[in-house]
Length: 301
Image 1: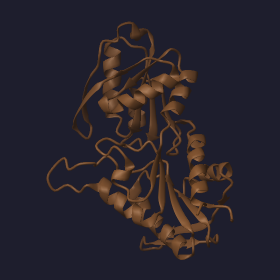
Image 2: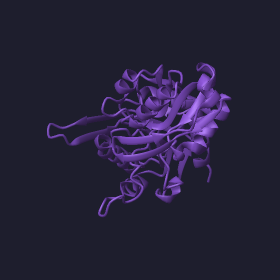
Image 3: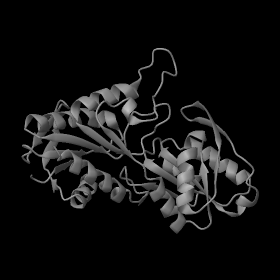
Image 4: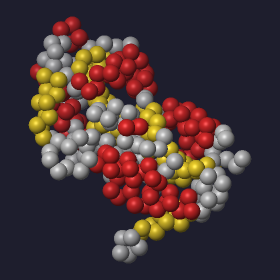
């Protein structure tokens, strides 16, 4: 059987090349551009006939990527691909997991329905699961979430002196504890009340003897950064050391990284699920292990 083909969306080329090398796949070539009227043009240049195909596309800013992604996967299927998998290190549209107000679109479910019709399986990294507790509740295709809390914890344990792992809210408790275990560090979890997209109120337990440690604020997504900014202020008010901010997904909307740095943090660090200058934690080995198993299972009758 011929080696799988990996097609990497613009911006994901380096990640895709490393991923292909790690699972003995080949890099596929395709052309993606826009016509003068902004419609998308897609041309597949590597023959996918009777091959397992993987599309690597981290889905930050998904509205710009969705139609070209669907066109590419549809073309690959029409050209004879055996199976099509989507590796989305960051998976968008997971946070609208209920109707907070009457009449709202349940976009996490709508997005999942569209992707499930286009691909045969999905592999992602730490999606934002809250009211949906498993991807299978919204995705009708096989969907696997790779959890990298232990990778993040190992990085913290190596790079931060006497860390204290700080979670921003009760949702984060389970994976914060995993990070803390991997970092061999204690942890605390704050209580968050969100009053709007960028209006967050937090409370925290008394640090006590933990005040001598370096607080490491951890979150799955750093978007506006408001949760971390409020936590930074509270930590400073309690006499804590200068904190480090660590996020899995570097969304960084509305100048969030600059705001965090201006708030006086020691460092802002993310994983490489979304390409960004703050990337310092490599999750590709963890992802490639699961991808290799997925491709091996796909080749079985």
